[in-house]
Image (cartoon, rainbow, N blue to C red):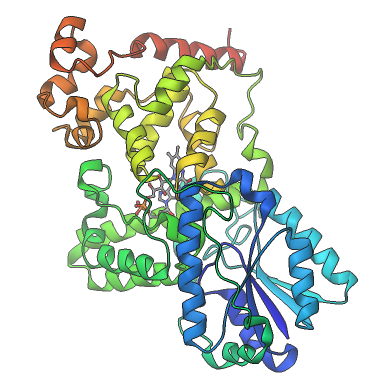
Length: 477
Ligand code: FAD
């Protein structure tokens, strides 16, 4: 027998490790798929993500059952749980898809050691990205540090094909095993110690992921680059939690975009499709940044001469978290996060710049808040996004690039539609007043929206202070 351990790959198709297990049935025996709730990771989990995972597991188990097989779901320390299961089913090998974070790699090493003591082999495969970390390198053989060059090589590299057929026959053979008999139910949020999310979390599961993929590739992908920066248009794919938890595979997503490319009407539409593929490459760029620099989770990627003197004012941080900064676009973004466990990319950049460059707060506070709330929180992407915004990451732009939250509002939400959707206090305020909000006097603000705060900081002053803070860190003075 073989055990296949699902982790961030909650699907039975376009799954490299699972396909390899299915291919190995003659040599190693039938496949028993398992998912383990790893309690050591609960401190980094959130209600929203756990709800998404539970939906996804439910659907995955149904998919296996429809193919005559099953999915074992257990809880506890994987070093014990996986080894116990391997022992129970008398497995010759355990198969999984490789992790790239420090925590994941260390856990896998421990599980591998334990299994080795019992004489069970482990086979680990590359599945999370189309081009796994290390595959795309500079001509000198180093991992890329700058996205633009990475993208060109990524785009031109030959792509592995997805395998979309469930390996029904070979996987079904495992159903004979009584390990599936107890049908241990997928636990509830409550049983796992999580609360019902306060946010309206998008549905998990492969079905929901495929629906997003189809809808997007039939329509919005052809105007993606033109529309993606306008949060009110909601014209991005919303695939992020599905790519995060692997309800969709990266190869199948890319292939679907290639069929859209084939359907594109003219160069302009094709360029829009390519702009979307560039986002898939960003995901793989940040994955390799994490894989080769695992300490970026807590440390700056870019080294400065001296420590950055972040200010970390608790009241300002609270106002940012609550969406009460008096900067309408920042507040709308923070409230979208609270309401939907998701935030539009343009606004993520704006709120992250605001936290680090207007409030001069350490990016780690922002990363922690996003980790607590985002349904798509992914160590590599979240960290990459935060460090990019904080000028401590891979951004080729210098530290003095500071987003002006009001100019961003004027450019990307000129009718304040997005703001009004998330900040009810401003719903009846004319858009031009919202665009001018920071320049109005207190009396006018009070008259227009008595319950909405005045700006908590002066952007121009803080911009100067942020630049001075970075110059000190660089040792310029
Ligand atoms: P689309 O625009 O439709 O993009 C398609 C896919 O490409 C996304 O689902 C995602 O997998 C990938 N992608 C898009 N933009 C990026 C990017 N800039 N970096 C890496 N991958 C990208 N993305 C996450 O998946 N998880 C996170 O925790 C996360 N945290 C972020 C934090 C900050 C401060 C910033 C600035 C960005 C963060 N992003 C994160 C990137 C991006 O905002 C989201 O991937 C995107 O908004 C998800 O919506 P979508 O699926 O509709 O994106």
